[in-house]
Length: 190
Image 1 (cartoon, rainbow, N blue to C red):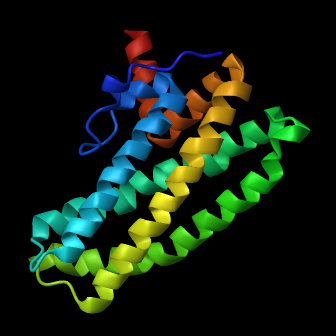
Image 2 (tube, rainbow, N blue to C red; image 1 turned 90 degrees about the vertical axis):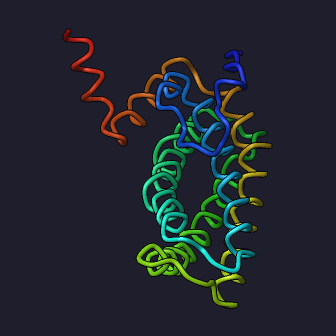
């Protein structure tokens, strides 16, 4: 079994996940999940605030448009396909994949409205409408429920089933998705 990285390396969840963790891709995803939980807390805080500053809105907008899509792609395009190849019939992975796909689709369907709200607020700041309060709470709740399933089922299966080669492939793909593969090539050439 592959050992886990020290949880202290995961960070505080308030800052973007340290890209150096990608060398242990499952630990990077777990750290990203911590980041997402922290951002759900921030969504709740902003929903309850009388006024949201332009900087607060811009920070949330950056997370929603830059960080969150990368994690979803890591899971949908690489982790789940690898896990499907390595799973055994008793793992019942096809059923898990259907559920994760449905949840990602719901999150992705609601994401544009949440992004639109923060784009407006990122310009000048302002009060959050009652509709936005509802959207933010609902969106944060969807994500939290989804993370429970991923942390309790998907990641443990991945730690159990994925081979060293699978993890190396996952690392390469995650680096490439973030444009970090080119940086690694330059570092290796020096």
